[in-house]
Image (tube, rainbow, N blue to C red):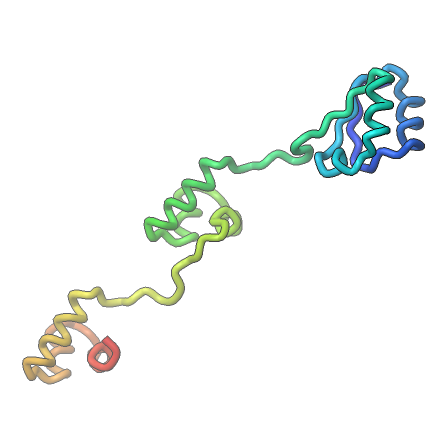
Length: 154
């Protein structure tokens, strides 16, 4: 019937006989590498004498949708500081897949600061010069509560 058969179950003497009866013109049996290593050398030699080659294959099944280039691109964008949501928009890859493709890379945690480093430095500098918090708030357009937070926590 078939010249090539793929097996996902261990090769036993009974299974070999069944396969050879169903496929008298069989020339090649393929199986996963893990299964190939568990198969007895005697069975492999016997099949070779019958003219049947047993070959391990790396991967059978659904092919990967995203290539190594996609994975590298996602990881590079993460290193540049993009969020997974931004990467999803840029690459048209679903957000869940972006999280999968990031691999074992860690994401930066926590909220981003609303006011940049220079603004926070200006707040501290003005306070050091003796400017009242209310005046700093009005001048820089920052809520009074935030000014106190910056002075306390940096």
